[in-house]
Image 1 (tube, one colour):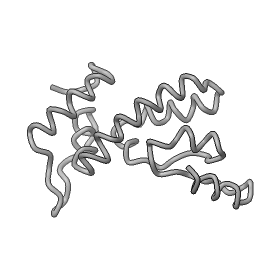
Image 2: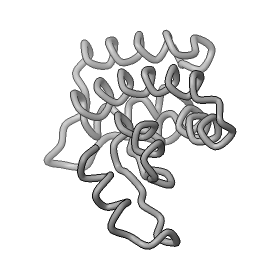
Image 3: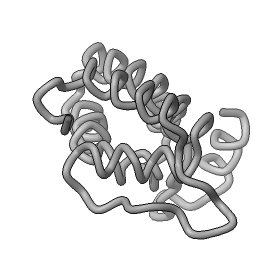
Length: 129
């Protein structure tokens, strides 16, 4: 957050600072970032957009609640499982994720199960069996 704050403070008001970590979207926007470019948005685009819109509309409590969900999702999907996790989540949600290119490997069965179970806690109807 210190780095984002310094960049925002050092740039002209017309310059749009974007963050790249789902874990810091809301707090970054509170200190002047204008948005984000997120790997998580490939798998959960509606939730990432909703966070941005809630912030823009001044619904800060709801934005903070959604931020907490995105932190957990990003930790599992992006930080722990990496590109293969994002791709599997995309597949589960009806998008085209596919398998990662070598040398990256697809998720193992247990990892897929864990991620699918997590996605079901977000929106049970949105996850494919």
